[in-house]
Length: 154
Image 1 (cartoon, rainbow, N blue to C red):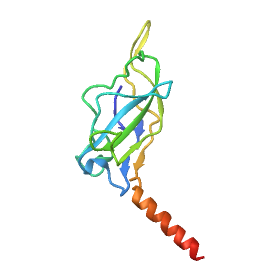
Image 2: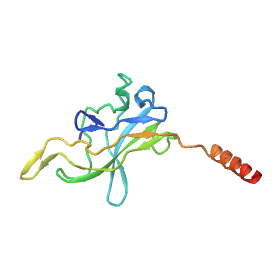
Image 3: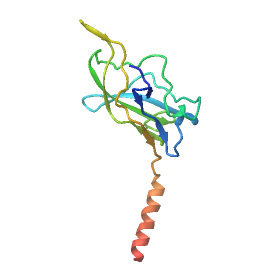
Image 4: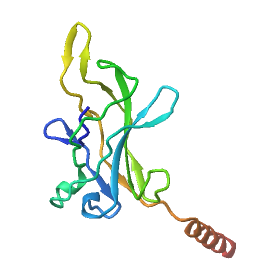
């Protein structure tokens, strides 16, 4: 499967940061597809990639890996539910800045018995999204304390 969030005339799913810029203008941003299995298990797919850094306009889109992404255990011609994850840092699980796309179902390319092969699979239906920093615990506590103070005075 082709891992690309921009295919002219087919897919235009930009990823933007909270300030409106693309991740490709900063360092440390990664993108990876995951398989959302039937039992809601999340299975990371490889290769992961980074974002284009050639221009501000291109920085919203992933750098297409040189090899296709494969979904282990799912046969060609079968469908798989996928999600795109984006994060800054060593892993999605530990990143404080991260985001996920909508889930999409894709029919996988390849040889499928006596039927004609599916030459390419694209991420059709993928929608763009914005990564917004999650508030820290301290800011949430301070906001809650301020709200209590205001309510108590009223």
